Amino acid sequence: MQERLQKIISAAGAASRRKAEELIVEGCVTVNGRIVRELGTKADPEKDAIKVSGKLIHLPQSKTYIVLNKPRGFITSMKDPEGRPVVTELLKGVKARVVPVGRLDYDTEGLLIMTNDGDLAHSLMHPSHVISKIYLAKVKGIIEDKAIERLEKGVKLREGVTAPARVKKLKKSVANSWVEITVHEGRYRQVRRMLEEVGYPVIKLIRVTYGSLALGNVPLGKYRHLTSDEVKLLKDESAGISKKVAVRR
Ligand code: URA
Image (tube, helix red, strand yellow):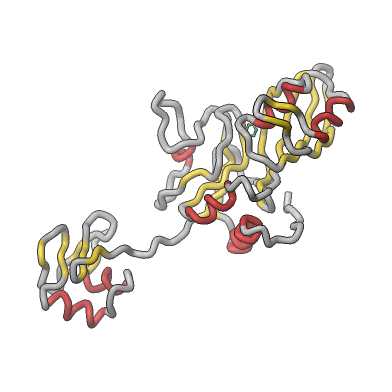
């Protein structure tokens, strides 16, 4: 959006509004390489390169934190070379350039955090941070206690044994069952591979929590902004300083 130059310069913290006016008149301000001396001049801080005394200025970016209820059939990526639908297409109305925190498979549904807070995203995904995630999985077959014990001890995958998971049986039909599985790692297709390894291929997988954050009643394919309390809890968790927090489900 076009704004007066002195307003942009002061919003960027480069000078007070009055000082910015002086700098403009003195010829210290350039827009896309051209000196601007007229006080009424407008520019677009998102598109134009504005320099004050030779230094490029940046507006502080406001942070956006979103939780999306990802449907199956979407890629957790900004673009797909194969042209498949990507999660950002579901964020109509979100102006900030948010990126996914970690990934969910094309076929997995549920909670996906998206943010432009690179520090938080990086910290949440760092392998040294143990953030637990809860998934609901519909599996082929009626899951037996023996399989649950294996999942809870750790399952041998090709890259090594998984950390112990917590598993609860939920419901069953004639041919399938649902389990709730809590994992503390973020390996590639982890839940699917763990369940496959113990003999129960996944038919449907939904992530319902990420650390302290719960999906709640966000409809499939829709999103909501996180509350400031939710952001704070996630920051604490990513910094490893949170106590055990009760997850709102
Ligand atoms: N585990 C999986 O197998 N898939 C996901 O998308 C997330 C966790």
